[in-house]
Image (cartoon, rainbow, N blue to C red; front, side, top):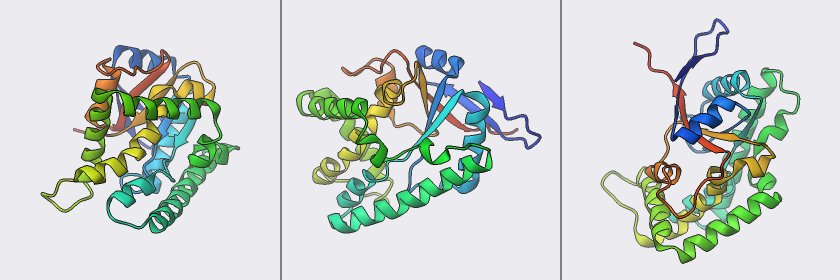
Length: 236
């Protein structure tokens, strides 16, 4: 599925749902949640504006998830002291938030500051808290689920280490808290934002999400939860 923004400024998005149920959520177009990684250069000001415009054109509501504070877990795994890791995460998170608010404001969104879901917003959300606790509990009790989370975390860390170096067990165990903090948004965003259905949009999902939406793990996404790979369409 490809869609054009139709504004004369020819950006097209390739949209690939991860399952039939995900495709249904895309078709309903009720709510989209865009994952914006604070330390990923992919999310330039122009790219965020592009995603925001596409989302507003195609969905009734949009929000942007920024895993700001949890990013500190990744930096701790890479050897930063907790205080330094928290500072880096906080600074970059605010910069990312500002880019989103600016993009939405330029597109006429009046409450752009309320469309960002960072840790400050999520930690006080009852549904998120329940889902986060459930994920932590499952991680401790379910070996297959735990291995899948660690595999996803190892994939992320490997991209931040020198070429040819793999993360060790201790690094993965520290960094996995980042994945567990964002997992609720893959499981039940509708409950978190008060929507019937929601599509989480990201350009490059780890393999564990394909397993999650394929029903291969013990924890299954809620009925209204979808996921779509959304990225600029490749032009011939």
